[in-house]
Image 1 (tube, rainbow, N blue to C red):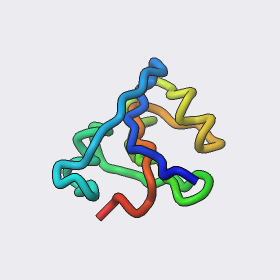
Image 2 (spheres, rainbow, N blue to C red; image 1 turned 90 degrees about the vertical axis):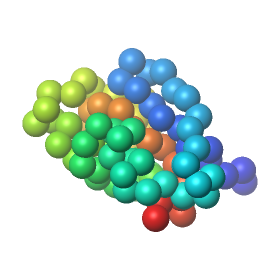
Image 3 (tube, helix red, strand yellow; image 1 turned 120 degrees about the horizontal axis):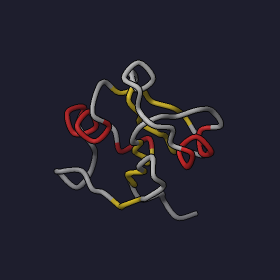
Image 4 (spheres, rainbow, N blue to C red; image 1 turned 30 degrees about the horizontal axis):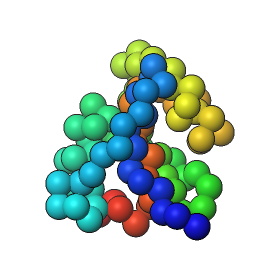
Length: 88
C-alpha cells in the first residue's frame, strides 16, 4: 500500500500536498501554523491521522466536510491529513 502524502484540506474542499520544512516530519510549530491554532490529533484508518484546530468550534471555524468524512466526526477549519509517523 502506498503511503499517504501529507495534505492540507481546507473547509471549501480544496486540497494541496504539503511537505515538512525538514522533508521528514512536521514540528509542532509547523502544524499549529497550518491549522491556525492549538492542535488536536484525530486517528483515521491505517496509520494516518488528521491534525486539526483543537479550539476550532470555539473560534467559529467553518465545517470541513472532507475532513469530517475521513474522521467519522465533525471537523472544522483546516486539517492536515498525513501518516502518523510524520509528526515529531
